[in-house]
Image 1 (cartoon, rainbow, N blue to C red):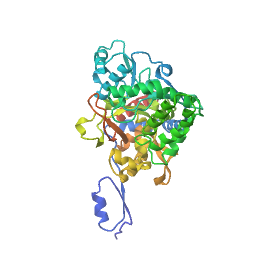
Image 2: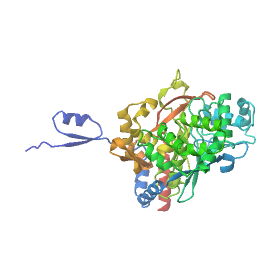
Image 3: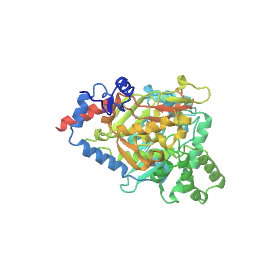
Image 4: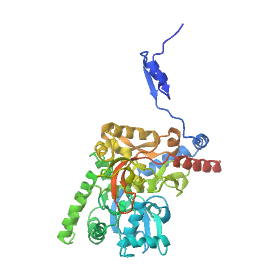
Length: 464
């Protein structure tokens, strides 16, 4: 006696599933992949760690419990203790000889801004000698920086605070798009804008922030995700809500009316202005999960244009690095792939927190900037749920029945599924001084997750 199955589940290759479907039998296709090569033993060790489940629950809860408010704006010298010759940059640690073109270009412009040289080109000799200069990741000083992420002592910084703990994070002010310092440009036009930001924009924002109620950045992020932003490469609604909150205090600040008008025009015409608040808000939340023993949750993804690095809650401040990848996307003007530098910037902190590329379903219009299609954007958000520990109920996706964004990247899930975090990003020109050449989609180098997993397994075995 033979029986015909009423339904079949197929795991792996579709060949068998196609044959069954051709016989009019329903087939459930399971998208399964083997673990990343060489991770099997470490996955078993980490899975058996008695701390892991509770540690990850604690890490996710700590992150979701943070509320970021904008409480001040002040120079980096005052906030971070930066002195002449000290520079912060995006991504993991790196030396001058290994730096990419856009990072070198941003440092050259930063040196001219600080008066260390008259001509940015003259800064090369100083940096090559290493005399009286130092380079340090923004992350090492509770800060984040978009693209090259260069911060110098005279640059003004946003200050975000968690009201419950008093912890703070910092980020520079956003210059706009195109030929700007963070993309490695250092022309006289770039330096003129930076001096205006130092002399006018920063002081005016300080008066406005200090003269207003603290701005609920986490709340704005919640609203903007309902309004078509994803808070990495689309920040239009967030920027306008920030302008709404601060403009009355700007107008009544007592500063020159022409300066106020120019500031309002600058912020209103710079759709990316809010990005530099979204980033430190995400870092503030993720930093709450740092140092939780046994947790496999990623607390930072960052790139310096040469290396892509991640940090994990259960491994302290250790970086796990691999080569930064070239983004796949759309280019400006006559630029093409040969003009682009590998991925750069601390802005992947947004994806680390569950927005940006993880929330592309909230901002289908983003595909017109970074490439792909609307179905791709929806599929990306769904796919990221497979490598995360939970959802963020504050940040929901209307088109997915208000499901929370996928939150808390799990190193072990990435290694087990082979699915890499999706990041949408700008592209800097590979040659110093060029500026932005496009925008696109990118993933981390696959090898950094097995490296992090191996360290977690080592720590697990040490505790046993």
